[in-house]
Amino acid sequence: MAPGEKLDAKDFYSDLSIAIITRNEEKNIKDCLESVEWAGEIIVVDAESDDATAKLCADFGVCFYSEPWKGFSAQKNSAIAKATKKWVLSLDADERVTPELKRDIEEIIQSRNTKDGYFIARKNFFLGRWIRYCGWYPDYNLRLFKRGKGSFKNREVHEAVVVEGSVGYLKHPMEHYTYTSISDYLQRLDRYSTLAARELFKENKTYGMLHIIFRPVYTFLNMFVLRAGFWEGYHGFILSVLYGFYTFSKYIKLKELQRK
Image (cartoon, rainbow, N blue to C red; front, side, top):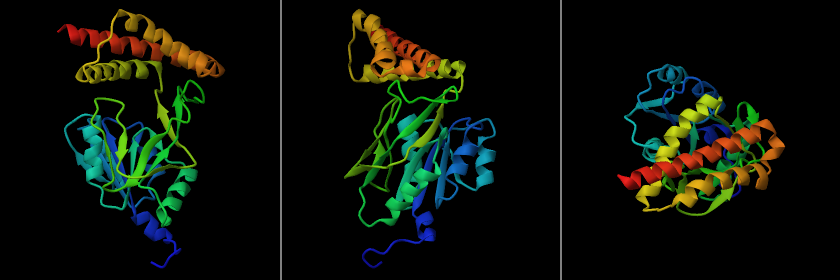
């Protein structure tokens, strides 16, 4: 390719792999796949779903793999390892690539002057509302990277991509449709707080009663006051309370592990 010459659209599509993990995501996966159906390759690693996830993926003709659950980081790394294209975009089933973000990605792949990985902001939706405050935006996550340059660090929860090389930031955000109901949040809170407590336990972290008492209060005040969650009204208040309870759950579960 001559200096300064750009790839045509066909080359662009063939240079990107989408890596997704699923487990009973029939409510989310169709919209997710529709937002990236232009990509050259879509890989879905499914944790033995018992709903319609597999069928919906088959309708899109993705590269589908059913594997036992290995944990968030390991499952996502399994999807990344199956990618064959030059670039990899890691997505969750409840995330969507907007047309504006698609154009950002296209510009990166067409360019000869690129970083090894890129952070992408997320517009997080809670109970159907985009949350601009509470520390929920721009919520940058490193998700786009050159194949072989990025992988997820081994963690129980809150896993993140680590890139070997230089990183940059894309202009436009993806959309993240998380926690569609209070029940949905509470169910995941139990799971995620358990995993977070295990992570702290593995790191030999020790916290006393003061942490159990005051950390949840600080979490609430940080989100609702310091990060202006009050501008979100009802949604900001409920979200801040729920995250305070998540913090409380995490530390009392850590205490429980330390006493065993």
